[in-house]
Image 1 (cartoon, helix red, strand yellow):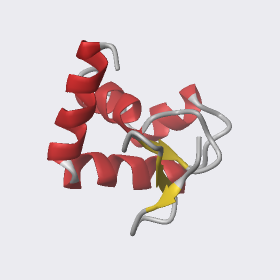
Image 2: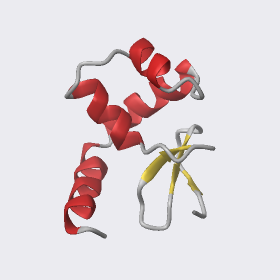
Image 3: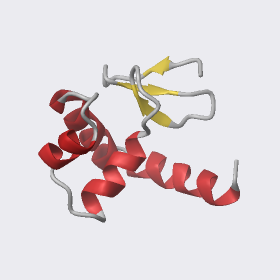
Image 4: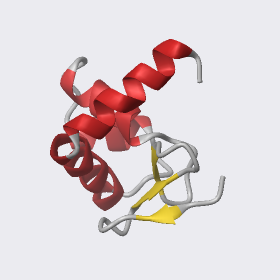
Length: 82
């Protein structure tokens, strides 16, 4: 994955435009879903993903909230198997 920087320093985009946490294979959308659908707090996500810092998790959740169209695009890519 060749990262493309975003304005959020902890977030990178791969060649398909999918958002990941820098230095991780974890997608921003995954954290956002676990936060919104499963009701996990940032601290609970930190416990679930001990390799991430609370700052990284907060950046991911902020990106998830502020880039709803991109997250919808990622969901479409997932459903289409791309």
